Image (tube, rainbow, N blue to C red; front, side):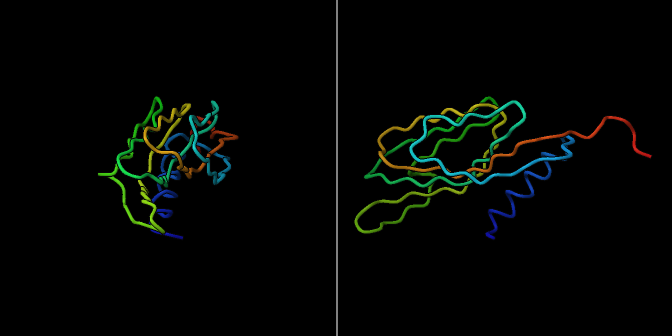
Length: 128
C-alpha cells in the first residue's frame, strides 16, 4: 500500500463517517480514455490516479458537481519510456455526482478511481 492509498482510505473513512454511512462497499476501477463516469445516487467516486501518454501539450479536465481537476504538463509528473512521454498524477478528487471528462491533445490515458456504494445509513436517533 502506498502513502497515497493511505491518504485515500482516510479521506473515504472521514467522508463516510460524516455522512453516517453504516454499510458500504469499495470497488477499485480503471477506465481507459473515458468521456464520463456515471455515479449513482448512493455512490461516490474518488479519482486517485491519472496516466497520460502525450507528445507534448495536453489537457484532461475531470469535473462533477462537487470537484474539478485539470491535468496539464505543468501539474503532472513526467518521464520518458521508449520514446513516449508519460505523465502521471496522484491527486485525489471526490465526486458525488456524474463525472464529465474532457481530453484535448492526447490519444491514450486512463483513470483509476475507487467507487463507494453506500448500502445503509446510521439512524439519526441518539445512541445510549
